[in-house]
Image 1 (tube, rainbow, N blue to C red):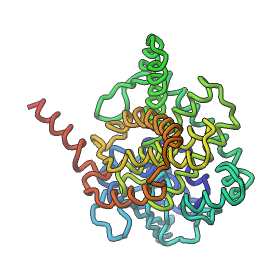
Image 2 (tube, rainbow, N blue to C red):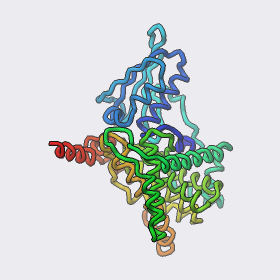
Image 3 (spheres, rainbow, N blue to C red):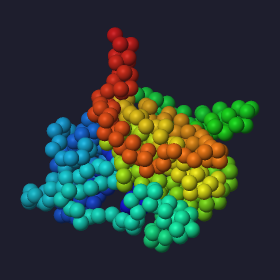
Length: 408
């Protein structure tokens, strides 16, 4: 499995697959071929079908600026991965620099077909959670011990930066009003939701609304092309960030323990990414919101001092009950239903942790984490193309049809 630095990444919204991955690939291309004077880009799959709504073309043009950059939206794609694009660069004389075929893997991660040498650090030998728990048990390690035994000495500070970015994006989102970018005309809600929470008498309900306002804040920052964190994707960035914000500012949990909880949550996200997918184009929204909920449930279980099996149980519950969730963004924007799903997702993460905490004392869990990860991948493969980030079906088409009928 890859380093957690490849799971948690700071970058511009609104989509890790559509903006962050093209941004990283374009930047990497320039680093390898600095003599590039102009480029031609061809977008395929959901990068083509919803690229406009996700600002894919704009992030590429901005990254290659001031070089001339032509972007084409294509349909036919002859490669074995559903999301991708090609880069062809040219020098000042018009001579071809290099051709890259780039897969957008989800969470801003990329694979370059022509440059397999550009690989990411893979410090983990274990392939799944069953193997990880076995190693932890044999060595009397916690999940935190396991992560820091395998990663380099820079990880702690890296996760500290990730935590900072999460906290700042929620804070920014809570202090902004106005309309989100795009044609949907959706107003920002986070600030008003947070203010509304202060008038709720029931402390339990107040805390839930406040937590949802944090998820809205981060997600609205993402939809506004702000700087957010893949956890594991940008479309699902509000879930873990909201929980971290509440734990730090409202519950006064130490930075050290929160950083350790990011390591635990990241470990579960890594297993999903390694054995299944975190890409909405591959697995639907279960791979994004489901994975984010799973990571947050694991982090919450760690913060509540649950043991290895209880943490695994919490993560499994969170993923199991997102199976089959489709990715059908209205208009191709990461707004409807994405933002609301982040708010619901963080509540479900807490509920999954709570259920694990008490149910684990009553009975042993029948379904383990690796089983539900395999099931998620199988389910994603069975989802129709129209329901995997293409906006060709589902809610995306229903809302458009209703809008058109309303105007007739």
